[in-house]
Image (cartoon, rainbow, N blue to C red):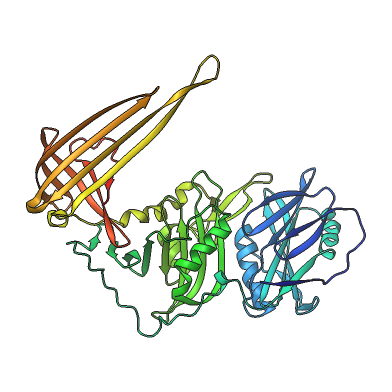
Length: 482
């Protein structure tokens, strides 16, 4: 989006610090106001004076809802009423002209926090097919002059009415009749799985589709350009444009978000029209432990009921007067900390990429391999100097022959100090299916062995996962591919 700078209000005199910029906004922050946090959707500034405090939040611009009034009502509900649990309706101004095409509406309301009365002033600027929102919270009027000075220094950017690619997916020829779901013919016996909890998985060309009731979850196969080192907003938009956008149109309320955590969850959400069916849907694109998952629901409420949280409510905010954290609204309508467990149910959807194994699926398919390697670095306890390193590696394989015969082999090697030691073992025999989820081999290291087994689907193939049924250990399966 290309922009031209303009100032819609004259800068007022006063005691100011350095100029600041965020998204399409430029402004001068009054002295004494400190950054209170920044995420991919907003920036915060705050000032504390004794037991009172003031806070300014500027949100990234979004697509307009169609009019200044619609923008204010939508943004107020999403960024003020639901965030601060404000019960009273805001006292709104009429639409005011700012500069150029920009129109302004402001409103205020009161609420209580830790026994203190808080006044929230909410301002939206609408124009150039965009909307940008500002929030001003304070417990005392002593902060009002500084906020007005900051507001009078504010400048915005204008631009073309064309949104960024992630905000307006390209139209496709995939319109007309609703899509007919067909599993991919792959030569394997099982292409769908019915789980006890009501979900049903089926293998498709570009994803595994998991369905229950009115919700569909697409477990996308890896695609180039969807996972790379980048800021959360950049990465989520790139994945959305490749995995989601081509199959939908009329996107509104697009948003990316994340939670800063050791295992960071990424989100992109939006309301769209599904090209294949013509139906309105709510889409959540998510990634945490594995690849990208796309959840297609008829509306946000259906998603929230099933997975336990409102994906559009994720933000960084205050849970006490002086403590900020990542927050989310749960399915009970409560604002809670966005702990990792909140997203576990959604994250576990990757486990539905699971399909039964028949002996015939493996018969005469050749070699399936699994490899492992690790390094250990040593340091002298007394001097801290390097004491060298050791390398451990192993390779295990099954070669499946005709007539349900197999050859099994394993090689393990350990290197340290210039010396390498290795051991190996091998077996030959026959194998069979005990049931849809277990394989029996006649000879593994001199005795029969039963494995729990299943397939996961990848683009154009399968990965075979097996674990010793009698001695499962940690329960982690070993994956074999060919």
